Length: 110
Image (cartoon, rainbow, N blue to C red):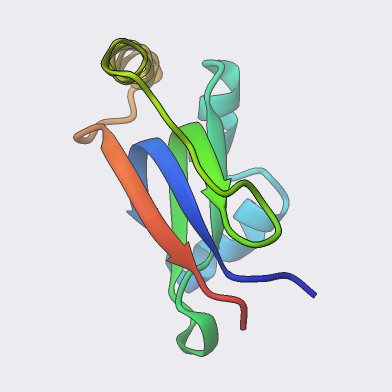
C-alpha cells in the first residue's frame, strides 16, 4: 500500500484524457517518448483519488515528498534558474510548447 505524497516538478503539466491512459501506461505517449529523447523525465498518475483526475508532468522531477518518500527538498536560486533554463530549452528542441514552471501536486492515496 502506498501513502499520499506531493509531487514537485519543473516543466509542463497536462490534464490527461481517458483515451491517453493506455499509451501512458505503456510509456508510448508521444510526450513521454519525446521527453526521453531530450533527456527529460515524465510522471503521471491519478491525482484525484476516487474522482479520477489524471495529470502528466514533463520536465525534471524535483522531488516526491511524503511519509514513504523524502521529507524536504531545497533548491537555491542558481539551481532553480539553471533547471528552468535547461527544461525550457529541451522542451523547445522537441517542439513541446507551454509555460514552464514549478508544479506541486498532491497525489492522493486512494
